[in-house]
Length: 306
Image: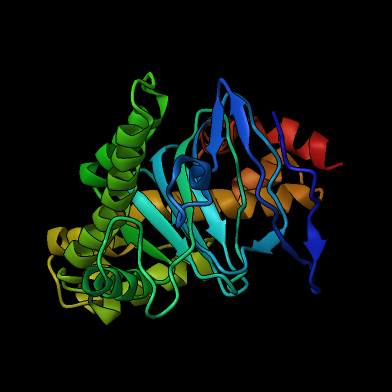
């Protein structure tokens, strides 16, 4: 149930200040952990999509950092500068003044999300002393913008946090201590995952192909040509590309094409011409891939846009 009475507040150029809304529903649990004694966590959510929902407006969260972790689904996060593939084991972060939105909310997604209010300089996280708080604050501010790959450690940290929240209450003091510890575990897991990602070799030539696929997904990208341009073997190029984008080259290119397909269908283009333009071998293959990405068929998407 939505217990917030505030509405989105426009701050110009199509960007809104998104209010904090809390729910307790079968497929969506959104909690205010400040009420549980965790002052730095005004929102934590666990969402499993039982049906497709519309994309929100570009928005910000004043004074709060957002961290989203994708456990299941093929999604996308948009900023004014670019769109990021939001795939299983990927993490999207944004600072309090950085507009963003999830552009697709398909059926079958599973996403964890937290809004973190970092303590001011000289202030402390709950349960930490001044030195440890300063260390954690600096590491949180150093998280990659806007995207990095995580692993099971972050998933486990989220599961323990919500497990502690849902456990029967037998001792309120012990519960507060446990929730603070689990909330800090989520932040530390983010810091550790980002550090592991930074240790991987990031190659400019590979990053350039990631950007090219995003800006021109209609073009062809033969693996042998890309690997030759990057001075890598095909297998090494695929590994480096996956480190940079979260998916192998052809899977990432397909997702870029499907995101373009949603815009083409919004503009009124037919399903068949969209499939041909984006180089899908058959309209049926396009429809199957599109539904897996968005949760609805291309014809249903087009009809809804009209």
